[in-house]
Image 1 (cartoon, one colour):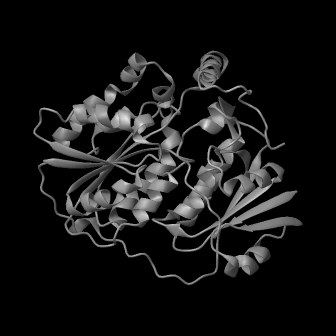
Image 2 (cartoon, helix red, strand yellow; image 1 turned 90 degrees about the horizontal axis):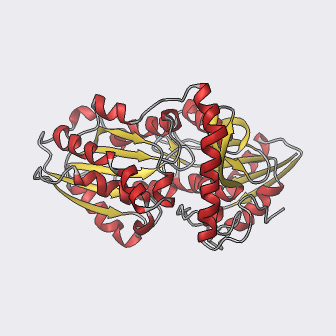
Image 3 (cartoon, helix red, strand yellow; image 1 turned 30 degrees about the horizontal axis):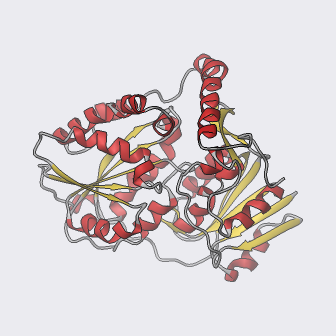
Length: 392
């Protein structure tokens, strides 16, 4: 079996990696000097040029190696108790290994495999929760159809992350101004998150609450977004689920923030994704619960909702219907100033559909959805089957 190791930490860790991974056929790729951009969720690798990323950077070299591999190990540093953005970026860009079409795998609704299952493991340095890393490996393995090798901490001395206590955060109880950061890597014009945000802020209208919006997809806005993050009391970050957690572009932005704030703040999140069931989002939710304290903020809750695939691919009237419920949540946020309410928890929907419902969805609904993806691909000028294997 062929094993591919993607090492973001540089050649100093080659000896440790070799000692820990004893497979017979191992290739270690040092990605620290490779040109790899963030996945922007453009869906071209699924709907326009199946299996081929729109970006022609060094990740194409990795994709060709992944097609030949059976096992994948990611070697990464950690931040905020999770992979740093360099390690997460490698997994976000793995999307061409999957198809746009959806099916059920081990009881989970997942994108179908383009090639073959990949087993996955993680070698990490830094102070991260071992169980969280193990859980991420298991969930990610389901995404790519393989088994999890688990997570192994590298032997390296590191200082403990100093987390501020939420008890020291004192805020003005009245919400008067809200800083909204769109953490989606997709440009605002085509961003599902952008449509959700603009429905949400309709709920703020008429309440006297002002708001400002910064898009991380445009790096020219990062300085203003950092300034707003550091100088205001109420912050909301909205973003889509990417490979079980935060998109790597958003992680890079968060890592760029200073460790000290100018004033106390409350940080809330709006998390959405294509799949409907609540358990799809639970790992990311756990990461988000501990994130604000590491940024000197108080946690203001996470609003979670799935089913956002249709925002990109449907007609305007259907798009408006999908995002309309967020307006009500905007009104509730204006009243409460956070998502720590029963209404926000209920908004997520079912944790998991019963077996019979999943079976019916598999037999009936998904056929219609997948046919819709094929029609949408044709409208984009796609001339190849969506399950094409360009690197076979």
